[in-house]
Image (tube, rainbow, N blue to C red; front, top):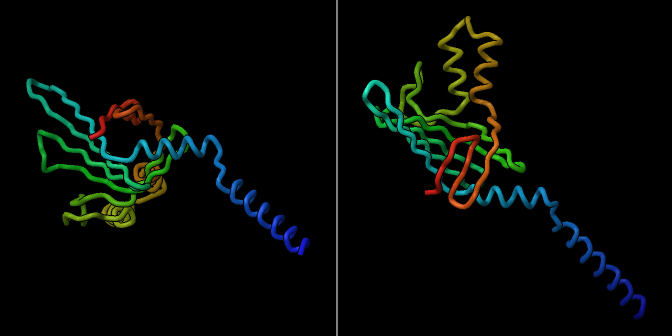
Length: 170
């Protein structure tokens, strides 16, 4: 009987230690989780510029939700030319990595419908449009534009900085 109690005691202590160690997070993991939680929500930046006596307002909105983002740019001079992109994001310390997965159309070339196009569809449309002039430079430029974008960010209450651009929580 004493041997059984010893066995259960050892097994119990082993389980407690195992679960305690498994739930421990490094300070960096805790900081990343905190930063990701603070980033969640909708953030807006409004900029007005003047040129030749007229002014135009550009509104940029980011929505971050559970590892996904959506970006929208709208120009007051032409509200029909709204640009939209969505994708996934990760946070590591003060670095934000956004990887596009879709862009809203119509997009020039053969992608003329109003719908979400995958990055692969967009790439194929560019290749088809460029024909034989699609080369390693074109591939590199496309991948730089539509690949993962890494930038610094910081959140302080209702203020978000992505790079040097200031956003306010909506």
